[in-house]
Length: 172
Image (cartoon, rainbow, N blue to C red):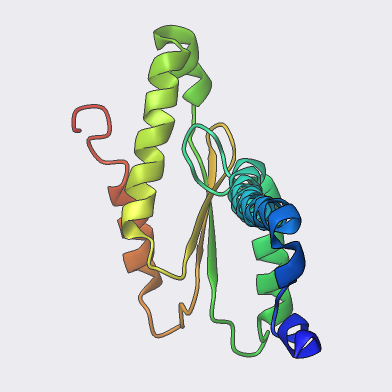
């Protein structure tokens, strides 16, 4: 019977004739094991959360939250490998804000940062769920539209992107 109990998870036992000397240490040891198990589970959960946060920091621009160059290169590499050259299904846009340096120089980096955040939000608003938006650094953005077939009006996509920059300084 003792062997069967150990197989089902018992970690200790106390014989009746030694109950007074063994019960308290056995209970204390069992409680310590439970506490150690809880602490280990908590540490594992915290480790998992920290890994997620580190991945986010390593792959996203801290100012805009968009994918950074590192993540975008991974996404592009995968997209190139998966694309059928005879039947392309993706459209890649590279967007460079002209004269952005002038904004930083004339109005300050704080306004420049606000502008970059606003551009990211607007570009993100036209992004579909499986599309990818990122920041190559500073004023250079990318938008990879997945499942964009030739049936789609390319001019419509370009107009949507252009629309993100209309009234940029006066709205929001």
